[in-house]
Image (tube, rainbow, N blue to C red; front, side, top):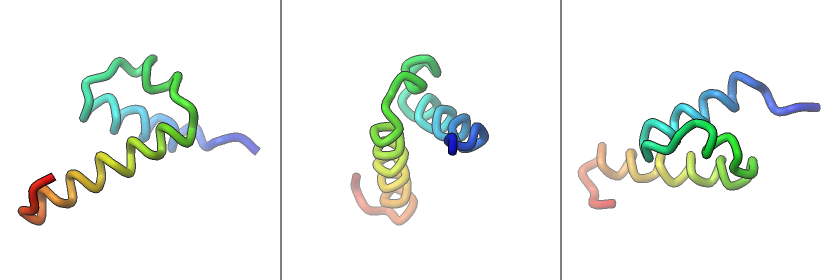
Length: 54
């Protein structure tokens, strides 16, 4: 079973947008690393939206 292409593009767009990394750099990350960055960025955004310092 392969990783859903739609999800891959969503992860790449999310990380590239927030970190200003080129999509090729994000695509070259291991799946687990990419998911970790998505989780970390999401946690930071959540704290910012709640008014808590990152």
